[in-house]
Amino acid sequence: MCERDSRQVIAHQFADEWLMVAMNDSSTYDDLMEKAIGASPSSLADELSDEWEQLAQQVAELVEERISPTASLFIGQWLKGQGVLPFDLIAREVLAKKAEVSK
Image 1 (cartoon, rainbow, N blue to C red):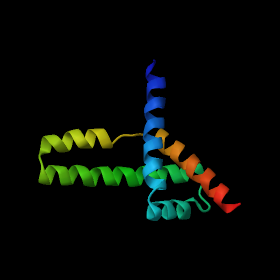
Image 2 (image 1 turned 45 degrees about the vertical axis):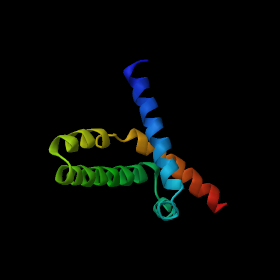
Image 3 (image 1 turned 135 degrees about the vertical axis):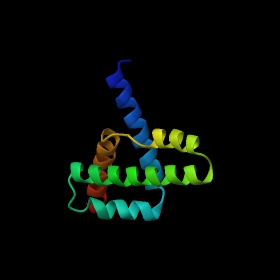
Image 4 (image 1 turned 180 degrees about the vertical axis):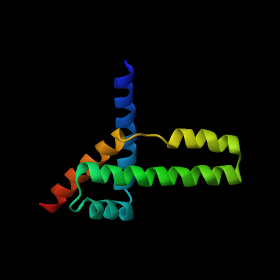
């Protein structure tokens, strides 16, 4: 498998897991449907990506404070830098779901 294909697989796995969690939490689901109103795929993807990066930073800081700087580096490396691809996939799925619900 080439690097491009590998990135695609990882992005799809991340998006699937993210959506599974988000769609099964009523508060998060409602928030997503609200964000989807009038949003384009790229604007929604950017917003979700920014929120994820903020969350990742908060988690890394908490791990550094409570556990260790080294653990924080591992966690931060894993959580940060997902790139925009998984959030493009997530945004498209959310907008499709919003359109389905709006029918």
